[in-house]
Each structure stands twice: as structure tokens, then as C-alpha cells.
Length: 319
Image (cartoon, rainbow, N blue to C red; front, side, top):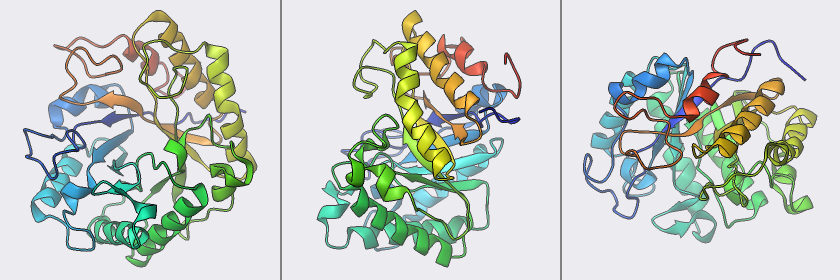
């Protein structure tokens, strides 16, 4: 089912989550945020969404306490730099944990997350360009338990007066391929009736192209396999009247993986009635030349993946 307007294209600009074992770490040594030079190639490509991974312990060193003024100032600078993008997602890149402890194993884990988002919402509610990525790849906890945490954070954000867009992940690494797996214990069951009082959200899923969907292998599954991995999640979005956002995916530069990358983006494009956008993993200033999925140009030269991604950046291009 095609839509007149294709999904919004985007990029993850990694760096703010680097060296997560050193908390908070030293800015510029342990971690970095994107600057104008880093972002420029993706603005030039026509991308509309940028996802900015940040580490919870850096923006809020002590749970349930005020945000770091120094880190908030850095994020404010990043938001200003990334203003050419339509949507700037602040992505809490913590995998469902804080301080090394999974949120469902902390007696006040849900309250901690809601407090973080209340404070961020109060700060950014005046800038609707900023969107809130509630958590990167929660895992290890039951989807229903994670859903209850999501609900508490959404209430806190909306009570703070923020109507900014929300990106809502499932548990189990929020994989598209496994979204319906587990029956009543699945993400599909847990989020079927999810609602945002402001009606401004998308369900965030991730999907890598290798055999176990981890993004850690150099080989990719064939295009028909990638298509099948996406079909159930796409149908679930449509059946339940949710919009979806593919927040992470990527591919090494070999020919087979580039074909699979094209198949994935073609599927999103063909189902633009439910997929509102996507963000490739990843760009960023510290990947160097050897990270196989990087889209960051090297010495001004585009990566091979850029030719595939570019096909899906402009409305109607090559379609």
C-alpha cells in the first residue's frame, strides 16, 4: 500500500553514548556530540530526521535529581546545530538500565525514567522540533512491564506541558522481526492499545540485516528474508492504527548487503501509510574508516551505502 509522501529519511549521529562504562566520562575524550561538519553531508542528502544517542548518566548523574547543567548546555548546542533537520530525536541510549541496573530490577526504576523525562520535557517543551526517544533497545524485561514504564513516562511528559513527538520502543531490543513473537507476552500484545494523550508518537522498532538481526555480522540475509522479517510488524502497525519508525538499521558495504539494504528501504517506502520514517545506523565523527556500517564520509568521499540510502531521500526519486 503506497502513500503519496514517502517516509522521512534520517541518520543516527552516534558519539554521545560512546564509552558508556566511563560515567559520566570526559567530553571530547570519552564521548562527543555531532557538530556542523558531521551533520552537513546528511543535510545535503535531504535527510529530515536525526537521532542523537545520549547517555542517561551524563545528562542526569544522579537519578531523581536535577539534570547536569553542563551537559544540558552541550545538548542545547547540539539542538541548535541540528536545526536544519525537521525532527531531532534525543535518544536515551541505555538499553533499559541506569547505573548498570535494569529498570525492572530497581524498586523505583519506573519513577526514575519518568523523572528524567519530566525534566527533559520541561526544558524542551518550547521547541517542538525536539522529539523524545524514550529508551534505546530495552531488553531482558517482560514487554508488559516495560509498557507500564512507558505509560508512566508519557504521563510525566504530557503533564509537564510538552507536546513534542515521542518515539516509543518495545522490549526485546525492539526488534521488528520479533515484534509479534511470544503471543500474549509479545511487544505486539503489550503495545496494541498504546495511546498518547497528545496523539503525537510513533512506535520505534529496529531491524538489522544479518542472520540474528544483531548488526554484528558482515554477511546479510537475502532480500526475500528481509521482506519477510518486516511483514508481520508492518501488518501489526496497520491493523492497530499505529505509525512506525525504524530507528536503527544498517549494512556493510558488500554487494549482497547493499541489495538487502535496498530491499528493506523499498519495503518501508511501499508501506509509507504506516512507516513515518527511518534513521540509518550510523554516522558520527568518531567511527573512522573501518566501521563497516558507517555512513559518515571519509575525507569527503561518500560510503557505498550512501547510493542506496539516497534513492529513498527525495519524494518520488527513482520510484
